[in-house]
Image (cartoon, rainbow, N blue to C red):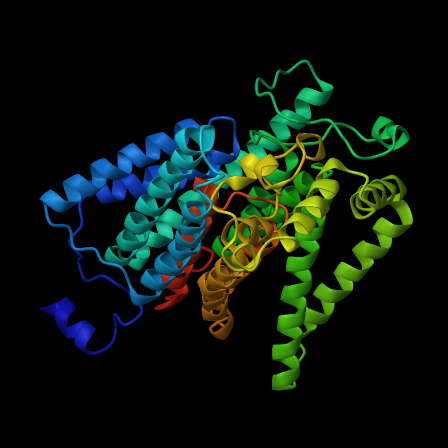
Length: 446
């Protein structure tokens, strides 16, 4: 009676203490998913995919037996349906091209993509539905668990690998630590790149950015926040990944511009904002003044990409030209799902490409599902961004917004749009928004 009376009086309005019916299987699956999904950037990605799918099916079966109370919100339904439609367009286009797509494509490539789609959307449906059945306090704890996983990945794994470069301490994970795409004179000066447990720096970079955003969110009032952020920035620097640097610069620039816009609108620029912008400018000047080798490395990397000197940039150019040379159907609806694996069928010589992905989600989708698929993709994720942008005065919504911007940026140099890590990021954004719906002060950065 006491609790009911307090709720009526509004004293519990910031908390979601009202019990919700859910099973231990649901909680177990979500916890396992949060721990394992980021590891899909490692060489164990296929094992993790199959394991999480099997565990998800078991959780769904047990949840159905005991009649768990979970359902999708309208926003989750829109995201799932619109994102699924992107690939349905590609499947229809594959059927349209069935006269030239046969043999290994049907038996291996197409069937493999269908399996991946089934896994991805099954797990996405169950995780988003499960989020709504859990209290905000429980979701906050899951958010902290996600941070712990990233801490082990970024800080423990990163510094362990760095130590192995200079000491006999072994790092028993095979990854791409060597520099490429730069002159030998620069590669000889700079040490090996950090990848932690990820297969390569471009897989590791998004994990570090997510670590920085979560450190800022969950430790905003803790003395640990600055050490976490400084260590994360150091590890990011040691990846020697131009894409990682640009990723961070774009997110920080976006954050500064949005905060300046809000401050100018209110007519109140705080001392913290002036100090923050001044610090960023000073750091940039110091890098330009004393980071000669690093600047040369970044310039060499970008020059190599822009000039078409790298295999990746040559492939992107050839793929774009080939897409533009297509029929009206191909421009609108694409060539079909996973058809980057059979490019010679569409006129690209085997010698013209070394990859089966463009390392750009947007270009991949335009190739597979055409302009229709591209606009469906925007319809999927732009509302996700706007939801956070409109409520950014709340730190949880603001963090969800930054994670969404991060998702857009990484999609420019990664093609992991059906991976468990990509799905994990979507789920994390929804978790931030769900907590932000009713944000108690005690949640923030204890």
